[in-house]
Amino acid sequence: MDIKFKFMKFRKIASIISISLFLISVLSLGLRGLSLGLDFSGGTLIEVSYESPVSLESIRNSLEDNGYPDSQVVNFGTNLDVLIKVADQSGNSTVGEQIFNILSDQKSDIELKRVEFVGPQVGDELRDQGGLGMVVALFMILMYVAFRFQYKFALGAVTALAHDVVIILGLFSIFAWDFDLTVLAALLAVIGYSLNDTIVVSDRIRENFRNERVLEPIDMIDLSLNQTLGRTLVTSFTTLLVLFALFIFGGELIRGFSLALIIGVLIGTYSSIYVVANMLMSMTLTQEDLAVPEPEGADFDGMP
Image (tube, rainbow, N blue to C red; front, side, top):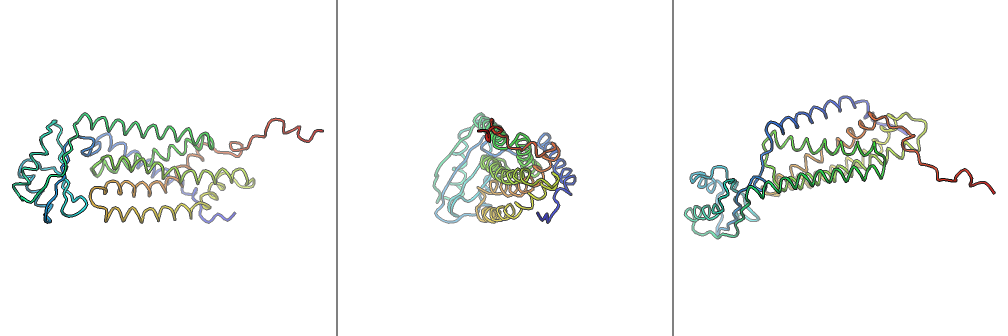
């Protein structure tokens, strides 16, 4: 029962940090909102292919000179394929043809691969459905953890997940990073990842509360966190290695996705240690809360 690190010694500092980040994120979301990508704001996506490599900067300059200053231009797959995103909320479905004509005048060896138009109404529906999906996911997690463990653990888990999601959204709002469907998918993945860490920590806390009778609740939580710390850090480290590789080498299309996951893994690791444990301490978790009920008729098992 060696407690190497007293996590709960710093729980008040951790609470101040979490509450501050949460409030700053909520404030930024309320005042600035999110920089919605094409999937939500509406616009046109154009994929073209060249016979020889072309400078993305020259394409951006050409589009800017022709009235499309905020176009996103990235390579798609190879340096011969180019993906262009143009935000347009006016409902003009001919933007793709206009963009292709501009690029054809600049360089003739170009082939139009596809044009996709997302209207503002469709973008609003995607945003609403994505938000609804996240709320439903959090509610189902609350029900599962309450059934699997105990309602105090359920409140702690959902608080930690809401904490992670709001802070990620807040960072995307503060730094005006594009928020599109890939980032929304990353948020749902972060919920699953954080929940996994939370379940592991919660399970060990429950076991120690049932088995260790000589320790105070705060010491049992510290013991549980120490026992699961190695597994938590190794899992987070190996996941981050993959995510940093995606962020650096994956290209512009999945940069927002990998960035959201990197932030989510870091914050999720922190919240599984401090947010959940802090919630359990504030709700005064006791051994009686986790006592295994005796089956009916147990007192009569020894009777003839």
